[in-house]
Length: 287
DNA sequence: AGTGTCAAATCGCCCT
DNA sequence: AGGGCGATTTGACACT
Image 1: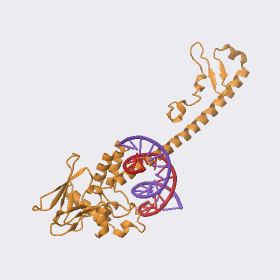
Image 2: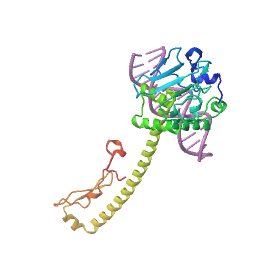
Image 3: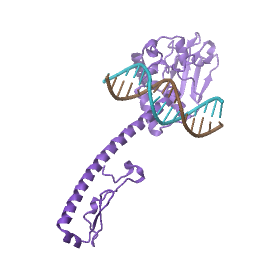
Image 4: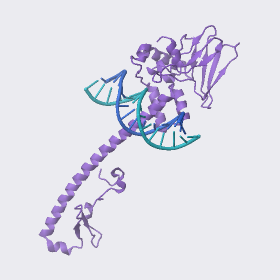
């Protein structure tokens, strides 16, 4: 991965001599990834010029004391290359929160152990691709979120399937992603969750239908048997208090209990229709 | 009218 | 080839 103008555009953040900080507007078409500019919920503090040039990025939202430190060599112009642009798109752990800068002298650190940092660096180096690879030929590259990113997004999705702008910003920053990417991820997640649910409902309905068909078949058969029995023993049946009737519309048998409250035929009566038009919400459904 | 967000449909890269 | 999934497009809606 080389450092060039494009990278600078990607980062949108340039540290120059004398600690001039420039937050540039994206200089690429919209469809080209432009990583996080400094989020509005972050405050930027500059040290005095006499001190070792450094920038401290802190979360203004009081979110758990996260802070980011940028230290730059003052003797040369340094392009700050955030991982957000290229690296992240290719598995360089976003949660690493360690940016790779052009000279290697500028680092942004988060509260990670040195071991974690080493691991992160290793990961980044092993998965780094060339700019050409990152961009693809037609400019529409395919990024894959890291496992850590996905995990955090999933975790967040469990808590709330939609994000307010503030949550989006914070999450994007935590993940080193663009808010738009977080937004897209949540949109896709919602859509695919809904699709899965619909498919599951469909399967459930199919099973329901099969079960009810079977039961209907069984009940029809039972009716036939009872009818046959009734014809064979008309007098005995009339002596019983239980009276069988057949619903003319659905052919379902209903009965009246005898003196003891027993009705051997009532077991045949299942609800004839679903309430509130939603079979899935009917707990009495055989399936 | 401008802006932001959403769902739905679709595209297209990447992996198996 | 097909599925997973990130990204884009489009249209609807709410809010200011």
